[in-house]
Image (tube, helix red, strand yellow):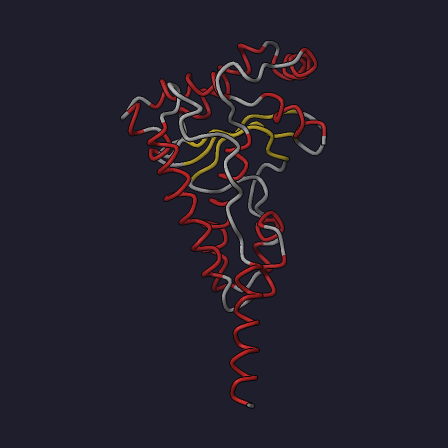
Length: 224
């Protein structure tokens, strides 16, 4: 009877830890919804292999510290320097990968389904002069990011909008980030995000990105 009780408690404990672990939110669209700008094969692999691997590796890294499952991934990244030293690199890489991708998916929408509002245009123009100037600066940040990384539009604590890029899975939430600000738009420029369709032509992928931006979500993030 005692052994059965122990086994039952172990089972309940494992179920609790499992249910508390990080999970991928479902995509808000079909894999083919962004065609022809982002192909369905890339979306499937990107979501089910690359993003899923970051989630799996983040959960594995936290196994010895199950209390950390109670925190959001943003909280983990913002307090990276306060985490146990042995998991900091894994949380930075895999936690960053999870956070960045979760945000990226929400910022994509089928072509023609989301247009930049007049209010958003005014904010963009106030910060960059023109919408075209904003896009050119963002494209440059994405194109000149050496190797793997991300391009970002962020809202600084002052309210000013700024365009930057980060390496690997880094973002502005990290304590080590030289620039602080809330991410409101991002583009994944790792090769796995575009190579099946665009091969080495990152610039073409960057240009195509504007066709599938969820501007309503960008405006929502700016407002909050």
